[in-house]
Structure formats: C-alpha cells, structure tokens
Length: 254
Image (cartoon, rainbow, N blue to C red):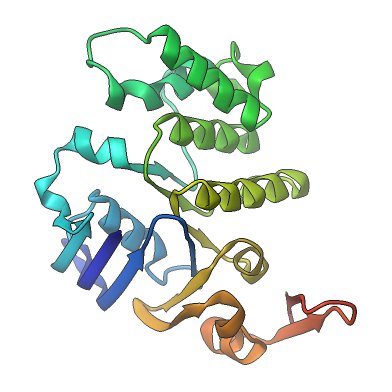
C-alpha cells in the first residue's frame, strides 16, 4: 500500500490542499481527476517524496516514506512526469537504461540483463526503432512513450503517472490505457492523473476527485462518475452518452 494520511500539501510560500487521505494498493488503478490548479501534481509529488508534506504522513508498505532511502524508493516507486526536457542528447536506449540504476552500483555500467529489460520495454511501447536516436530529437509523444518504458524498466511496485496521455495521438492513448490495466493485472499499483473522465472510466478501478485542494469524492469509478458529479468538479456543462447496446457510457464537454 502507498498511502497519504491527513495530508496538507504545498510549497514554502503557499498551501495547495488540506486534510487529504489517499491510498493505492497493489493490483489496482486509481485515477486522480480534476481541473487545472486543483493540486493533482502537488499531491503526486508528495506521495512520491519529491515534496515533503506540510503536515500529515505518507506511508509505503506501512512504514513512513521518510524512512526509505532514495535508492529504496526508486526500487518501489516509479514516476512519469507530464513533460520532460532533457538537457543532454542521450540516446533513447540510454534514457530507458537509466531506469535500471536503482538495481545496480551507481558507478557500474549496465549489465546484459539490464539491456535485455530495456529492450523489452522499448518493444512493449513500440519505440525500439528509436533506440539510437537522441532523446532530444524525437517528438513529445515519442518522449512520453520512452519515459513510460524507463519507468517499467525500473521494475517498481507502484507507478505514478502525471497525465500520461497528454502528448499522445489517439492510437497511442489507447495503448497507454491498455498498458495501465495490464500493469494492475500483473500486481502493480498504478496512480494516474487525467483531465478526461473517459480515461478514468476505461482504466481505473477507483477515481479520486480533487478541486481546489479539496477531495470532492472517491469511490469505484463506475459508481462515482456521473454528469452531475463532473459538472460540480469542473463547474462546466457535461454531456453524458450511453450505448444502448451495452452498459458503457462516455462524457463530453457540454
């Protein structure tokens, strides 16, 4: 379990959210849904230990996160940011191999096993043909897929993704949603943020609604998400579409 208890989150000059409780178990997908500026990324960074909570506590496997070394955290937690711009022109393969550093001495080079795992992840996300290309010379969508490959090369227990489909085309959005469900099926805990309630409907077992640093709701995704709930979350009209041949529904801006 990765969990936050009565968290106050924010920065040295401001508080972003208060009294937040959140929990992610292995084998499940949790979607964090809400408008811009609502505190989603700040909450992710606090759960990962990148930001210290202003108050409250983050726990990993029942222990306070602060008790884990950075290397121990890296073996258990992987993070895929919404956007990433590398300063140096590392190859795509080298970027993915960086996910293996938590499993070896910092001064040793990648092993044959490391290269095998990196290669498998490149294949998994359809970017193996880019392995020799400089990371700085590929598209934003391709960079996002490479970052996903790097996260999985870490072999973590929990994977935290900040808007993982933000730069992806329609086809690759579907690929990422399928991979998220596969990760949960193989025993990982996955937390992702999104602006699209349809992604939550498709991939998440549970959804957590966050607006203005306040939790507006949390429940099984199918029970929680409705037109009324989303209109309250985004303060905007929402259209709900139902498929007459199944129980599937979708949401569109009104």
